[in-house]
Image (tube, rainbow, N blue to C red; front, side, top):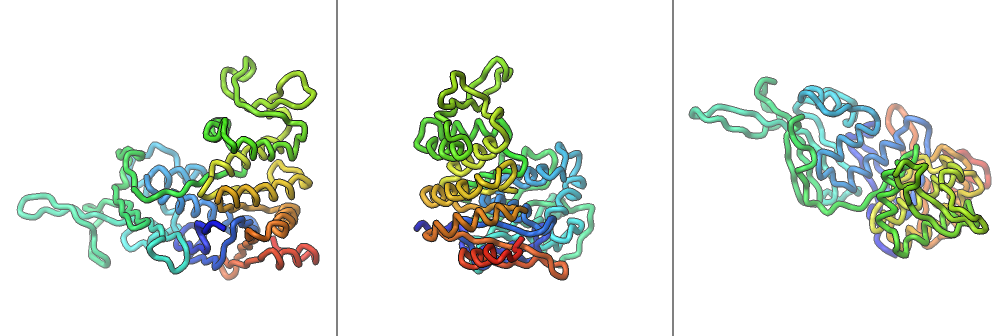
Length: 364
């Protein structure tokens, strides 16, 4: 069995998490809990960890997805106002703010740290000098400038928080981990094409077709082509057994589109992390056990660690069925709950989850 990318997880000072610890993770992990408890935030933290926050783009993109920012920024103040939503407590960004830290428990060398430091410009002997503000040093707002300081895998990158900075040019050489997210609303047409082109004419096509055949057993093949009706854009077209003409995959329902997105994301996440927000969206309950089985099998073969969220009891039962049948790769249900304002974690392994589903014990 391949070593997991993360066998545990700690998240400090990120969004709703002051200091969240998940002591044990499996190959396939299902996050459950009520609305606004932090399931999507946990996926975001994993995205940041995998990317090593190696360019400013990763940080701003996560916030843009939640409509927390509108770029381009006009000034530094607007950027700092936006950034406070990324940090626990949503306090104003100022010197002394604790950094975001994400990574395995008790492994400081593997932690990702995202800090906002401040540089101070001074005049000495008639020359301007810039240095970092020391902890607990007195300061005035007039001569301070904020900076991101990113630490990951033994490397450090520091760059100004400045609307004039070209956000994509700086990069931390930090061994990024492949990571693919399937959002709750599904993948865009452009992203589907990008993922398909990454595996077209390879053995991984078979895994994608297997996922689609769970819903349409007569499916023969899939391709992305442009048609007169698509306005020149490439769209997924499928050939169905005993059908004279290829059909747009979109015409076969939301379930086919969801299965396509999840399976494409899975095979493109080889040796990395797959994130699925609201797994059950668009999927009929009877299809979910077989899709989970496929995910367990392919994740093991391609060394992918999977994290998904759900609100659905049907999804939890389907996950439990697949997990019990794939005992060689651990499936864990992670329940997040709020207690006295803090996010608590409860873990269910295959055996405990089996008892919960048989006895109708609520784990959501």
